[in-house]
Image 1 (spheres, rainbow, N blue to C red):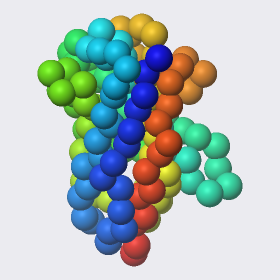
Image 2: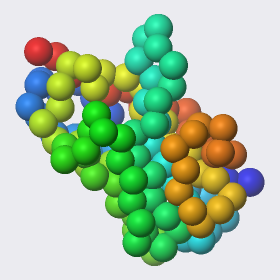
Image 3: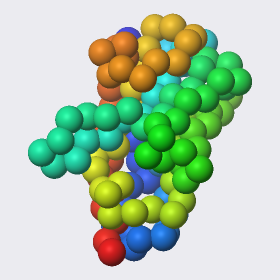
Image 4: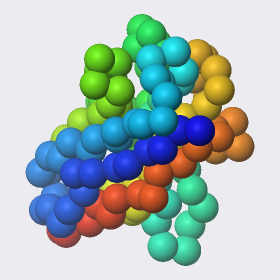
Length: 124
């Protein structure tokens, strides 16, 4: 099993930056793809970004492309989401997830383990 713990969320103003972290334990995650998803109140969970096991391939949703960047430090068993130029519509609970493959995916159903989420709130 993989345990995932997100951190780094908070309340910020539009235009600010935040970096989310996802610390994995239970097994080494360097060989598996990781992803970030978010869910706003009353909305479905949506894909934000994903990174391959090696870190060489990254995928970002169009809504965050150019503003958010996913990265990983396999030595620390940690995945990051650097968020800049935050907008009120980025307000959501952000979840980290892992899947049993080296290859990235955009569907939440492709991911096996999930963290508890961290709240990001952006005021205008």
